[in-house]
Image 1 (cartoon, rainbow, N blue to C red):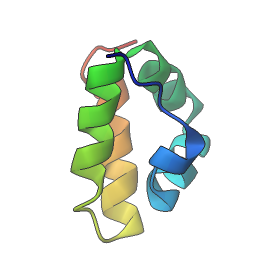
Image 2: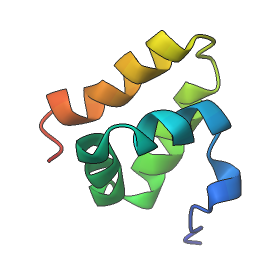
Image 3: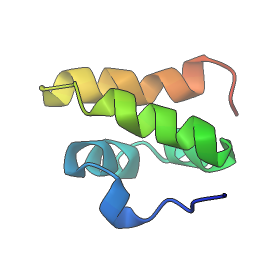
Length: 65
């Protein structure tokens, strides 16, 4: 079963961090659905905005783009 990611599936802090980093947002969009789900699941444990921004930046630093 292929589940599509919706805005309601993305934690607010992750959505805000992605919105502020367009390169990371584009990289997130290139991930497969299971990769996106894993990335979102890992974001649930992040508690500070600076850590979330750093986490989102990993999308551009890991050669996804």
